[in-house]
Image 1: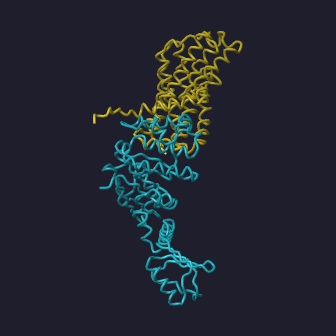
Image 2 (image 1 turned 120 degrees about the horizontal axis):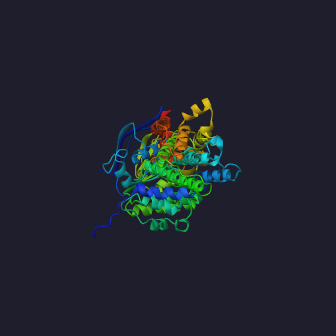
Image 3 (image 1 turned 60 degrees about the vertical axis):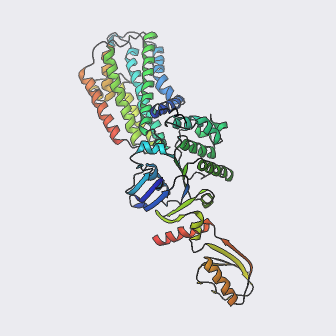
Length: 254
Length: 304
């Protein structure tokens, strides 16, 4: 008998392939993560007066403020809503447990989910920036590296919030409820209802201490071409590191 | 040495002792049944064999590997079908088998396996849309596709109609004929009698009987059931307490006695002594069902 052509098993890649298929079969998540942030800009752009330059905003337009907010919205939709539901479902339906009976690890499944949600967020951000630039005339972030750094830290922080919810919720229902509970504060601090830089006094100080509030301020500075203040970046980074450590520590596989 | 060897297994959940000093041997090429009522510790036992649960005490080896430590080696050697199959609702049958196949170095051809298990027509159907029997067969397919040396099948026919159950049994025989060792967890005696080379009966977390199905039946005090109509009235209690008699029941004129072979002879002698003959006499080996119920009951009484 000739030596059989032994194929090398690639559990990580196999899991990523299957999870990608499943991810593309969730039109709800795809809509909220990929389409909704851009749609928000589309709607705001249709409101009269939103696209014109305003003296109160230093010559910028309202939609210009909402470009980074919409980008943060993509991260919130993926991290606080989509990811926890998927992971809690996988745990409740014992999919992580079954995976552990094969040469693939449950960690492969979680890793694939992080890659997929991260990729979807990246695509969504590109859509938002492209729509802002091409249709609304909002310039691309002038300090692109600072912008990307602040955004990446914010994304890690939000995914960690999602991981914390997914890893501790005893059921899918509770995961969804917890996700919604953190969803609104995240939206508020990101400036979805009112831009953070326009908030006054004490409120602004409090929001600037939250992960997405600090991220919103950093993104706005980078948008204008300034390297973000170190204090904003440090606040987001501290949240990102702390929440990730907590999520990893609290994660329950079953 | 047995392919799977369990010695002195103990696992507690809080104050509940799920399994206590349990031994199990599974020789290569056999179908070994683990039988017992719900809550007997069957699933805990096979979860320890699969390495999903780490016992509090005792040892488990699978071809020399410790299941909860040598994860990679054990997941290659052992296919597992769990009670809850744990497949994503929107994954199709073919994709589920392909996924597991791609995790192994030298798997079976997924399409061929899907066809062999009669899932060809629904290969493109999502898991959530499959019938119960199809979902079970798919779970078996994912357990087999890596060409493991042994498979654990946990309650594989629960919830299936008789026809689907028989098809699944044929499938298990086919798996064994291809040389794969099978550990079959069940609470159905018929299933065990049909499929198993050896069985281990577990009750209250302990082994209460072990052997071939015939041995387990023969080892009981009620291995034989005889029924007859005495031609003359017997005084009450004439048959109770005879050596080798386990139980005496009357249904109208008919008398049903269970007991050992010695018991049968003792009953016949007693009838002669009372001037009666056993009309319509039937003597039959008790089924595994009856032996099982007796085992489980006596185990429950012992712990009560």
